Image (cartoon, rainbow, N blue to C red):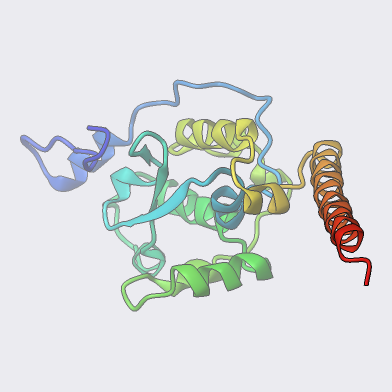
Length: 215
C-alpha cells in the first residue's frame, strides 16, 4: 500500500513472535558502492531533493518512501526505543533504528537542529531524536545496517540522483561545485544582461524625448 501504513501480519502466536517474523527477512539489495556521507541528513534530504519528512508511530513504516516518493516516513519515538529492555523486538533492531536516526539527525549538526525546530518542532514529536549522538565513518557504512539496509539504499539513491528543481534547491545543493558555480554564473550573466538592457532602453527613451523636446 503506497500511501497507507505497512501492515504486519499477526494471525497466531504472541505479538513478540509476529514482530520477530516480520523483521526476520534478510536484505534484498546489496549495493556496497553506496556511501552514507555526512551530508546525508534529513535537512539536506528535504532541501536538496524536496522529499518531505512524515512522522509515524508505526516502526514498520520507518524509512519508507510514500506518495510517489515525495515523502519519507520516520519513526520518531526515540524515548520509547531507549526504554526497551524486553525481547519484544529482534536483537539489534532497536539499536539499528536509533543509529538510522543518528544518521539523519546528527546531534552535532546545527543546520539540522535549527531546521527541525523551525519546521517540525511539536509537542507530538519526540525531541530526543536530536540527541541520539553522531555516527563516525565506520558506523555509516551501509553494511553496518541489516534491518533497514534496503530502505537506506533506496533513500540514498534518491538523494544521490536528485537534481535541483527550484532556486532554493540550487542555492543549497552544493554537492556538485562545478554545476553550482556554472548555474549561478549563468544567472548572474542573465541578470546583468537584463539590467544593462533596461539601462539602454531608458537611455534610448531619454534621447528620443530630448530629440522631440530640445528645450
